[in-house]
Length: 471
Image (cartoon, rainbow, N blue to C red; front, top):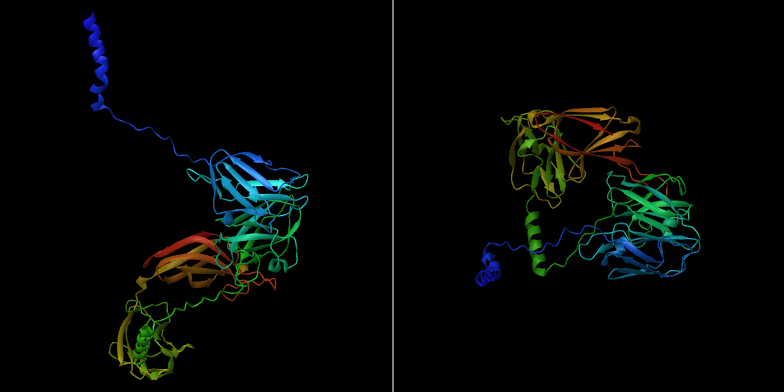
């Protein structure tokens, strides 16, 4: 019996060691990743407090929090002279108000994306704390959209401002009472507004929040906004009255570098250079002119020294040679047809620049015109097109307008069009001059409106490219 008991004890003692070689050691799991933002559990004074009469607010959350980028995120309404002092420690956020509060006024503090938890950085989006120094909260709202008039695009760096002073000079001289940011979709919203009439504008979100520069992006409405039970939604069309002039960056150049540059310039001045607008040695059928671009402005152009010949060196009839106003581009205009062969002959004395420099030698350039198969046909049908608004179709590549086509019906057709990717916009050309015209606040003139169709078309060569678009 004792022997049996000893066997059992030995088996129990050694059994853990017998199986260690086969065991899989699994570290303890940390559980699923926390994706829940902080939650407010207490506020002193409480949120939506009436008859508020303190200058300190304590917010307590259910986890440790951090407050980041307050300058970009925090909006206090009405807009204070002095930004509140905000501090965070562990689970608490403390706000110290530094302005004397107005009587019977609803205040809101919108933290945007500033508050987040410490561990995972989960953002408590658009957290708003609100209170009133009177016996009721103002709960009216005003919302709408901001679109860039020239492009139909969105600029989320802009803000919408509200002025109680309805005079036009208020947006120029005064800080606004209220402002709201534009989001990535162009939308904005004001909450907790009083039932008042406001002048509303759009501005960049800079320190002054004033329209003190005509190169600033700006928008205004033709009438004031009456905030109440049924505040209308609006759309602003933002514009720059004047374009900013790009500053040329000047840097100090070492004397040796200056000498080298001057030497290079002198070498350049000894010879007149030029380039052609040919595409791989081929003339575009849709471009009426073959262009010769000179490196320096010309003093004179001898048109008899610029000849268009056939492959047998016989002169071609019906072309025209002209120098543009910049005196750097010589255009040879001719009714090009597909798959034709030409010779461009430039005599040495054909061009003389302002440094009295001519071409180094006579030049003979052979080129051909493109084939019609290098292009594709283009047909676009528009649904719900209002031709009474004088629409102009803008085709763009790399954000630059390639062509503007006035639309007089709901369909356009081009037998030949250059292949490539194109973005599409519609300009509503009020004055019918074919280009976008900006606005002017002093004259209360709204800009012309461009509708971005958010549509990219891909034109293939030797292909019937057809599209149907809903406006």
